[in-house]
Image (cartoon, rainbow, N blue to C red):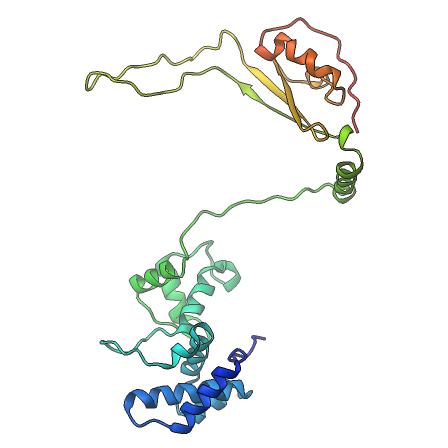
Length: 285
């Protein structure tokens, strides 16, 4: 059930000013409009619902809701009429809210046999839906959506781990970060890495740009980068390996500080091919 529309809590100054406007009444067209709006605000602050207030000031419930929303947004400034040329508005604030809510709802949830709204389909649905109907042209509908910050976008995917031990593992990580930072590290691998030409800029005769030869062949192969980040030491280190696998993954031991200098002098950091070596067991936490 939707929450009833009601004016926000009035402060003392607003209450006194509203009572003064209501008691003085309206002597001109401008003051009559201000008096009716003040009546609506005071009646809503007194706990009356929209239907009762609409009968009190002889207007529609939608107009009463619009006055209340406008006062909640602008305060006392909303009481002053701001007339402009042209015919009265046909799309009220409630209609705009309904348009935005419908546009941001998946069509299948509303019983429509398609996956996304177009401007034409949205306008047709608003004009033929059950309950409150909004008859609006396509261009005006596009303008309202643009003014409300609603744009046509591609949907984004998201995923969540299906691991049943996700929470215990996260708790273990949090414990390690708090009690064993010197023994905690993060690991990741990135690749394959290849050397390829990157276009730049230079001066050349018009219509004759300098061209770089593409590398369709990889005579030197590619490399995999393995990186370790030590939480306690706040240090990032890694190796460049000719291929990936369990041997290259366990080749370095990030939990051993003595390995840092050895990896720094290791030509594998330069990506040079190395003879096969026996893997060493890494101490994992």
